[in-house]
Picture 1: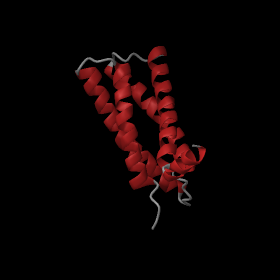
Picture 2: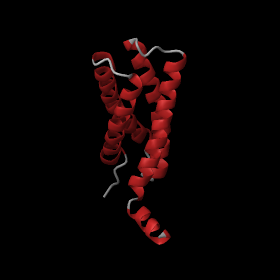
Picture 3: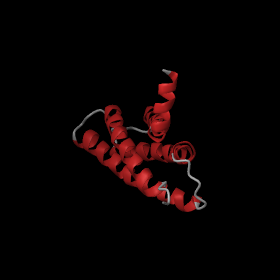
Picture 4: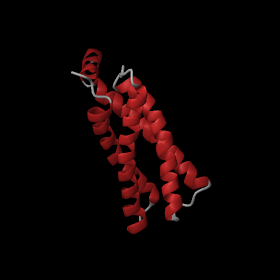
Length: 141
């Protein structure tokens, strides 16, 4: 059994590591978001809702870049500034997706911001992997 697990891990290492980093990144994002709306921002105010969303995004992106670079994609790029810029740009695209989902589910539909945030995080996680794999940490062939 142990051998089979190791073989499966080696075969799917990138995806498994991405899921682990993704869960940790989501925890960072949700921690900042929930901490913000439970302490100093009111999610019933559309501006404050989005402010909490942006704060959680900034913290999550900083964590995610370092973790993805090192543990998921094992980047050896010498141009870290360019790579970080592409990473931030791709994450900005999924931030817009996140904000749209929050706006639709909370502001327009009147749903729970806590549930909407979980829904948006699932969609964002998938989008982030695709962008990271195809745009940010692509390996030269």
